[in-house]
Image (cartoon, rainbow, N blue to C red):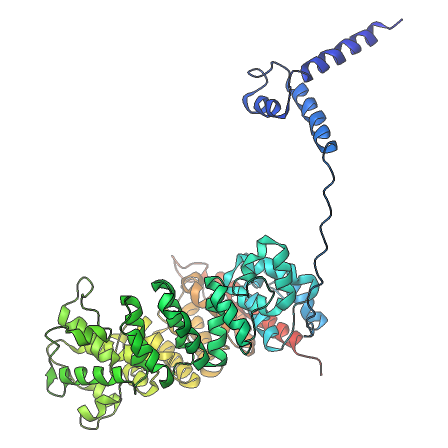
Length: 541
C-alpha cells in the first residue's frame, strides 16, 4: 500500500503530464511562450518549460545524420617565410587589442598606446619584408580586414593564397574573393593573355576592374587593347570606371584612345577623357586649350570667353556653372586649368612661374586665375609651379600668392619632392602652429624626421605651455603617434618630466598640465613600441 505522500506525488506527476500534453506541437509551444500560458493552454509556466525540453529532445533525436561532404582540396603552398617569433607574438597582441607591456604607467585613461592603430604599420612592414601571415593568425587577420577596409590590401597580401582558400569556405570573408578570377583562387597573371581575356569577358565587374588594373600596371598598352575589345558594349558607368584606371601609367600612347573617347555619348566619360588628355601636355587637346586660354589671359588683363562653343564642349568644358558662379568665370577656369603651364612663359615675356604668379591681376580675376593654375599644377604634377603658388610658408595664408585654401595647399604640396614638402610644412608649423596643419601633415612622407618632427614636437610643447588642453589637438596627436620618427621619443619623455615644472595655470585651463603629461607619455610609449615592433620584424642576420 502506498503512503499518502506517494499518492500525492503520483497525482502531481499525472497533473504535470496532462499539462504538458496540452501542447500538440512545437508551434503551439512557441505561441504559448509568446502570449503567456494563461491565454494559451492554461498550463503553468513550469509545465511549459518541461514540455519544451521534452520536444527539443525529440526534435534532436529525430534528426537524420547528414551525408558527409567531400573534404576540400588542400590549401596552396605559400613559399614565403613567416615573421620571426617575437613579431608573431606582437601581431597576436595587436589583433587582440591588448595594452602593450611598454605602455603608460599612470593608469589614467589614454596613457597606453592604441594598439589597433599600430596594426596597419605592422602589416605594411611585414609586406615590405616579404613575409606571409602566421598560419594560426590568418583567420584573425581576415576578421580584422572584414571590420576595417583600410586593412584589406595588406591583409590579403599577407594571407595570400591561404587566405583566399579560407575565404571560399567562409561567407564572412567573401570580400577577399572580390577581384579574384571567377571560381579560381587567384587572379590570372597579367602575362596570361588567355586567362585575362576569359576573365575580362566573363567576370563580374569588380573582377574586371581588378584585372584591368593589374594589366595596366604590368603593360599599359595591353590594358588599352583590352578595353578596346568591349568598349562599345559597356555601360556608361562601367566605361567611366575603366577609363579612370588609365590614370596609372598615363602616357602619350594613350592619346588616340582618349581622343576617341571625347565623342562618347556619356558626358562624364567625355569629361574624364578630357581631364586625362590635359594631363598629357603634348596632346592635341592640350594645344587647343592653350590656344583658347592664351586668347583670354595676358599681361594686359583678362578677357574671359563670351560663349561656350561646340569645340569647347567636345573638349570637356562644362557649359552650365554651379550655383553662385558666373558663366564666363566658370569657362575661363576650365580653359586655364587644362592648358599646359609651359605656355605661360612666352605669353608673359619669358617670366618664370614665381614672377608670373606674383604679377597683379586686375578686375578681380586673381582668385579665379590662381585657383585654375593650382588645379593645373596638380594635374600636370609641375613642382616649379606648385612651389610658386604655395609661396612662403611663413607668410599669412591670406597673403599667399596662389591660394589660402588648406585643401588646395595640401594638393600642391603633394607635387613637391619629399624633402621640400617636409621643410615647407615644418616652416608653416613654426610660423602658424598646429591648429591649421592637420591637412598639410597628412601629405608628408612617414616617418616625420628631421626638421618636420622637431617642428611638431616643439609646437605641441608650445601648446602645453600656453595652457590649452591636448584634446584640442587630438587629430594631430593621433597622426603623431603613427607618423613621428621613434627617435623623437626621448624629447617627448623630457617634455613629460617638464610638465611638473609648470605653474598651475588659471581657469579654465586649470589641471591641463596633468593631461599633457598623460598625452606625452602615451605618445612616447607609442614611439618606443613602434621602434620595438619594427626591430622585431627585421629579418635575422
